[in-house]
Length: 187
Length: 187
Image 1 (cartoon, helix red, strand yellow):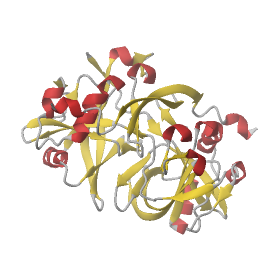
Image 2: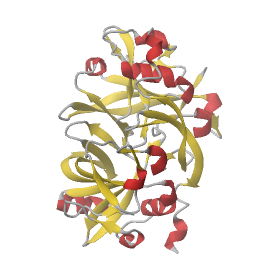
Image 3: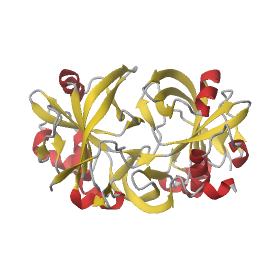
């Protein structure tokens, strides 16, 4: 095992993929994001880093709410499209069946198996991005994607993103149970 | 497609998995994290959310540097172990071959195909976590995991984590090229 030094302009991978929904310029808009994750357990805070000039930020700042929609692999083309084109120039609201939950101005995508509504918890300014911190207020799932009252990853059929290489990947085989498969090393 | 409301105590998924290396109490320590991602392109800032009481935070706060190591699937047991037990109680430095780059106090794992050294950019206080913002200063990769001078996801063989279900998953098949597969929808 010998390491070589490579460019530090690198991202972690694989990265999750989601569609962030907001109300901008009077219509629902969706942006594809890969720079997001949960950041705090209780309250349940998710962080989404969005480049400062993105149209989506205008809507989130104006309304204080947004949605996060996790697409399944059959939505890979529409997900890619939402990352390619700005809502300033195209109407992305026509791509999906849109529904609303309990928050205003947090449009969600019915085709996505799993959606959450967030209220803005804080905005963290970074040099080129705004890290939007959202508190998850409500969550919705397709009933067909549940097993024993829990979301079932295989039924949801999510995908992830890698860069370099710029590819989307389906989930592969399960390789171990978390908080379990490493226990024997303590013996 | 009909949605049901589920508990909002939910995380996005799948999540990436990494081992964060720090120097704590005079020895290298490694913690498994899933709440991390890139947050800013230039400078290249990654964010890692770590629960406030974790041993790792003591080392990062003291030294201002840490590493992020991306494990391949053959390291799933050791990765799980590093999330199960605290460095306060077990010596996790014996699990790996450790190497150092150019920063002090940022121990890296030779067995991981891809490692970066970070200097602390900022700490963001959240209710139960500290979001550690690190600027990637140097990156290292296994030469055998490169194709045409870029990291090759299939050679690295990374894995991801899902909760609920608490499982680790290998990468599956490529399902599309990013910034490409959705272009035809614009026509």
